[in-house]
Image 1 (cartoon, rainbow, N blue to C red):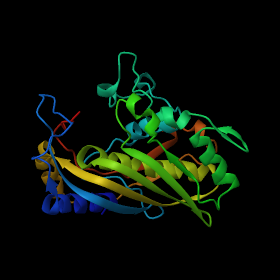
Image 2: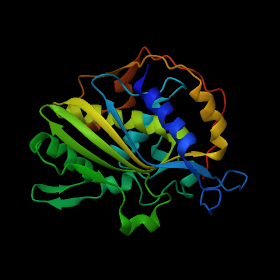
Image 3: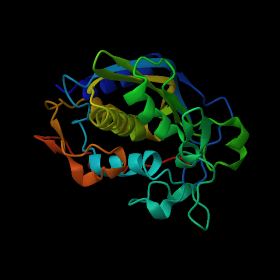
Length: 276
């Protein structure tokens, strides 16, 4: 059984049985027809994925790894905030007429900062420290820049990564302020698991644990029937992630440098509505 499936199903059962509905409160998100999008939520979920044991991808529904990695590279490698640099339409609803999502996500990672070693952006600093200062407890990124929030089309959900090297193992904590469990949980988990693998490979390290901390873990009202369907499904074993061992430069990675081996999955069979 895939660990990603096991944790997702466990989380969703807990949210549905113990969570709190916000139907008595005004909410910002809306469905396409303008109806308020209410949720049932739990506060403070923490999940651990050991990347040495398996790759955490859901099998109870088909997950599109290369599309997820394309978005990851758009943010972390291209450091872009324009959807014209992205090979999918997942950000279209938040972009302006020029394709920009404002000073969000990749924009924040690309801002240069001054250090004694020279001017670097947040990603360059992580890459530098993993190679030169692996004992550091300061290797982290943060997208939640309060100074720029008013110029972001969407406040960052997955907003911070903290990296820690133990021996020759790279571990990481993903901090997320908000998680739409059906549309985003499996997506974010496999994305940031790939990120740990990429950074580990180019730094001469082994990918270890990914710890996912979710402040507000919620299921939207119109997603409940789909989630209940997923809870009835029996997961397949987790596939293997293959990463091209010849790539040693983080900025050289493309979606062609990785693949899943032995991926089996159920089909969802229904389009997931997204609240905006």
